[in-house]
Length: 389
Image (cartoon, rainbow, N blue to C red; front, top):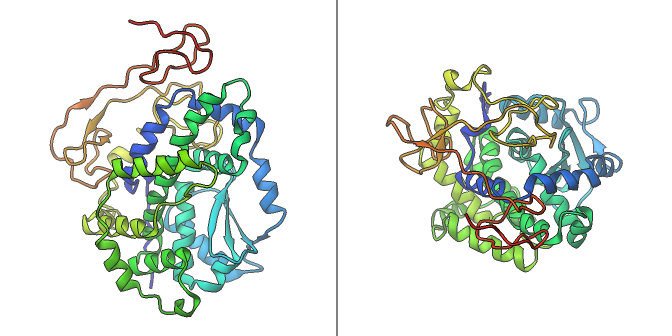
């Protein structure tokens, strides 16, 4: 079928509310920016890029023309700029992932090519392209490297303190799981067929090869619709438990049935159709003239109030003061002024809603200037007692 290009698509049009809430919690974590800066000073982007570009086959129009054509179609549908590269990696399991921060590349395993048709590959690539579109890569790559390096992360961030580093790891790894829900939506917007998206997730979950040509999609979707006993707070507790018990071998993605359930919920609530029909695009609030400031290094849009670019990690010296937002009457998430629809739940924003005041700055240790955790009475870095107001 002919797939629709989503002209002027912006990532906040399809951001999942679980992703949004987890990101807000992550960015309130004391010393997050400092740890990210120290970590990337030690590791650097070339570590992963050399590993994969030096051992995988790059896909071009000259060697794998059909696959390259699908890849470029995905980039056009999601309106993702830049020279992104695609690679094939020999692996007996179906999978795909994205690495890199400033210059991301997408890697697909050879088993994915063997088991998936063109429509399914469109979804798979679209999911990965969604991570790039949503500027997940700095935090996502850090989470992946934390999992890869395991317990030596504290040594890589020497000088900050292992307790603070560990305090960042749990919300970072948790957010990376929640970000998969947003990228699932990007994959669906790309393939534009819930049955295709479902068949891909079934194959990634371990569908027996004898059923690969005719996966039982209807029964899986019925199972997903019955999967209702969870919410954000339940997920938060479960994922944190898994991560804290074994952060180096924890779950890298949410449960497959839950992911299908969330896509079905997005469709049933009308959010998917509103994005596809471009009702969520508002030229008055999404024009370049009134967008948030952009990073001078990678040109990515900056999140208000951040000292570092979420896309490439570059320090930001420009003014990124927080602009007061409004509260969605349906889901209570923050919505930027002038939006016609909530980017988190899709609810129309016809009512005047009260502004959300900017958050108060976190108190800092008088001895070492490290931000205090919310209820901490002593500094996690140097042990100094917190001064009472």
